[in-house]
Image 1 (cartoon, helix red, strand yellow):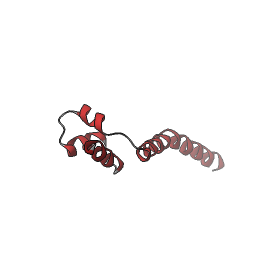
Image 2 (spheres, helix red, strand yellow):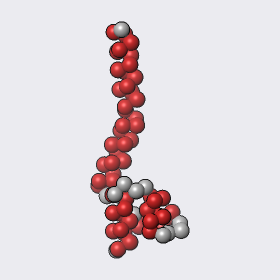
Image 3 (spheres, helix red, strand yellow):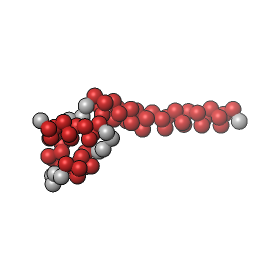
Length: 71
């Protein structure tokens, strides 16, 4: 149980799965994936990052076109 908790806390602190693997001293990334369970906080952070990556360029383009049409 301690490995699960520690690995999940490291993920929640902002480390990625490879950094968790290194911090825990595991040789195989599959071990890190087995023990580190993304929490709700981590899932929200990932969803927000994906949303920003997908939709911000569209918003920026629309704003650019509006400025170009006005100017």
